[in-house]
Length: 569
Image 1 (cartoon, rainbow, N blue to C red):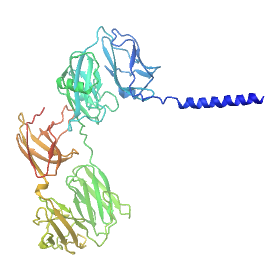
Image 2: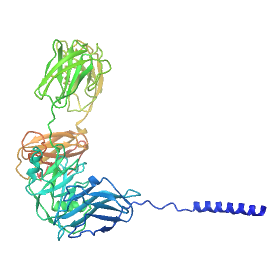
Image 3: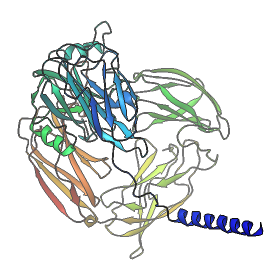
Image 4: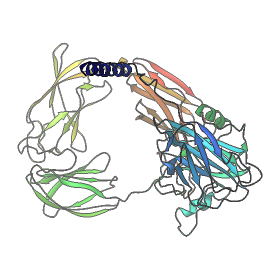
């Protein structure tokens, strides 16, 4: 018995040891699967003629999942009732909920709609085509849709529609007249990330074309949706081959040779003028902000005397009350831009709202210089926190400027600007020098009679060789109607400078900081000195924009000259 137990113990220990060794020798699983699923079977077969089934099935080499079917599965021509699409086994089952039209070629496009079950690898594109007639339509149409201003693809998902020729006007009328039924697209597709699109398997003929970021997938243009269209019809052409095109490079080549170029624009929906915010920002000072610029505001404040200023964008009113410590006020404000309101405001300590909420000391008048590094071509400014009182300010010999290189000092007058919120120091600063700027106390007084303290600052002046200059000679290839607006953009696509001109000529951009710049020209055809977007309802296209093909690398102390053979395209 003891011998048997010893034998059993040894056998159990050996089994556990073997199991441990076997576990250590297990393979780690191999490389990660990064391949998308592969379609292996179609039932019925793809490209079937005289199709009479109520659906179809696509089988894959592995289990799959569906992603965002409503947006990623495109049926062309569209069906009135969307088909039912679901996963079944190692494939997807499509069931029709609508009667198929006779003698029609149907194309199902699965764009990023199918992924493998385990790793989520997307199948970029898959198409299934069949015909209820005796042949499959074999015409195509290619193109690109881009932002009308930037000329780059937009981030939003963009659908492209083909309408029967001559029905575009009906879709435009339906946008403003709900009694008109908008025509439905006869073919639908979607842009890729580069803005390129393709229509395959369409009938021969001419079509009206529309692109839109159809946010609600209702196959209709909405008032807030980005839209593009062509005023002339487009013509289909023979397919180059029957291979499904997925490559953006191939699409680009085809779009350039047989293209429909569409320019997407955001419709201009005039926003009703309104007051965005109004409140005390300090005791005795209120701020009124509107969503659109004001024209010539009128304020009525009863027995309270006020002084107010409108900012450069004309959307912010700053109002100072007399006396300074006023903590409640009723303001009746009107403006031809659409404002006619009565505002009741009370000061609550620590609860000031609006832009830059502060609480000003009652006995201090604050001011500052606008910069410590002064461009050699610019003017040094004094900026005040409240309007100055011109009757008590000392403007003669107000500023003492000392050149640090040789300690020479000069007194300088001050020139008040019309808004009484700033003043110029007209001193002949030399390039590349440093100066000690001193303003004595009591030189300025504001509307409350508060005197300003002294101010001391060291100012560095730049040199001409710190900047580059750019000259662009424009030579349009045709007569230009209206104005040309030539804009200089930095690397962040922000407009640095702009110039207006008629026909051909030379535009100069001076005092540019070193960096990369781009040039674009806006064709201001109506001469209102701004770029106008389009309007789908009135069949008005956005004004054209053309970019200079080069990115210009502006260097310090360089003068650049470029000749632009400007084509409207």
